[in-house]
Amino acid sequence: MKTTFVLPLKTVASALPGIAKNIPAMTLNEQLRSPRGTIALERHGREIVWQTADNAVTFDINVVTQIEIMPTEFMGRDFVSLVLTFQASEQRLSYQFVTSNAAESDWLIQTATEIGELLEMPVENRLRTPATTM
Image 1 (cartoon, rainbow, N blue to C red):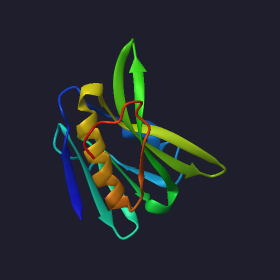
Image 2 (cartoon, one colour; image 1 turned 90 degrees about the vertical axis):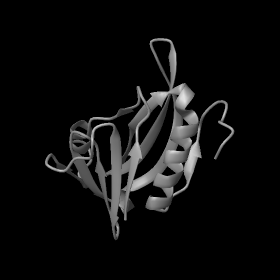
Image 3 (cartoon, rainbow, N blue to C red; image 1 turned 135 degrees about the vertical axis):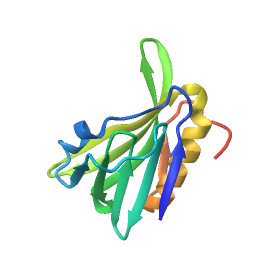
Image 4 (cartoon, one colour; image 1 turned 30 degrees about the vertical axis):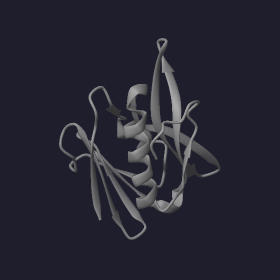
């Protein structure tokens, strides 16, 4: 099953090579890409393919330990992030996979919910003032 999400303006999908180099169970695929302005997730059994406009990574669902929506601040401005935590050897590593303006929190919550369903995991909303839709 493949699901594609259109990113709102000023929403950033994180660079996957930097994440993949720290997660031994993650494989980088520089040939596979989603259209610009989107992220795409595809599930094959226990394997997930996460695509951005630049490249893709593949990982087993079993290495994902948590999905969170987190507030983020940068240069005094409020943002929201979709954070995935992975079990990598002896440690847990968390990465912001998608970051958006705080005004897009409803979109990020909906997107995170759909990603959680695809990964069969709950999503923890850590926003200080959760959005009204869910």
